[in-house]
Length: 406
Image (cartoon, rainbow, N blue to C red):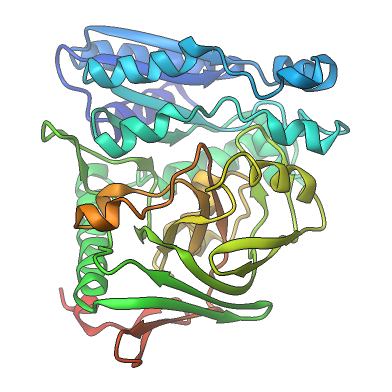
């Protein structure tokens, strides 16, 4: 990593991701060992005219101490000012940047998984409010760390592993392009064509089929497919994830049936690793969750509230994803979910449906947990209200003709 790499990644997050405006407050969420990148983000944000940069640090080992030693009846407690800060950023029409890149892999290893599943921090339920009300221009950005590099490339020495992670993050973030903004606009044009074609198909459901997977996800009558060209209620465009490769919608949380196999490991926001995940759904609810590792923690998360065991998102990713093309398992959902089609337990997006009636049916929950279920060997088929089967993805390639019409 060079100082130039750090500053260019920070500038991408500030100018393309969050699109920080002059006079805005900028909220930053980071782990302690993200400090160097936080400093670069602050410099870039102030250079773009930010009024104030407010940083909230998380220490994974403090969370470990809580789960290990805190009174059992206190594990769901969230200090009210955590949520108040998020809502206040929305009221102030702030920009928000969240940094991803593990600093303490396995921070919760060896702890009681049921206790670990009850503590959702650093996520707070108020995040769902500002996302759906579109009051902040926000982004999540991947920052390479040495512990993360060791996890991704265990056969390399530290220097080589960190260098490779930086090169791959730069590639998937399009920082290796002469004009990263132009490169992003071209990719977003492709994703927008895909989202428009899916919406125009007026699908009633999508069907995933592959080894270990036979899952049908019903859609709401006015579900519309979205991609990463987002804007706030005030018209500020922003890119929620850097990088992003998906098109998505909010499904009908009552109409999910079948079984599904996760095609990549899932890493929860607290670093818990879930491998070999299998989930069975009946009438929208996950009724069976098994995994080779981490199942108890995930089961705990899906019992947080009524909506946690239902789906709030279904997202499709084609094989043109730069992340998928690398073939690297990043053990970081921000990247891995943009390598393959995925679904999410928990909260949905009210802006992904068109009527108030359907908005009232979008799943609500304090959690939002994405896990990857797609790949070249998983077929995705659309089902129309008339019972027609419409090929959507085959071998990771879009089958809707209007997607490929440049």
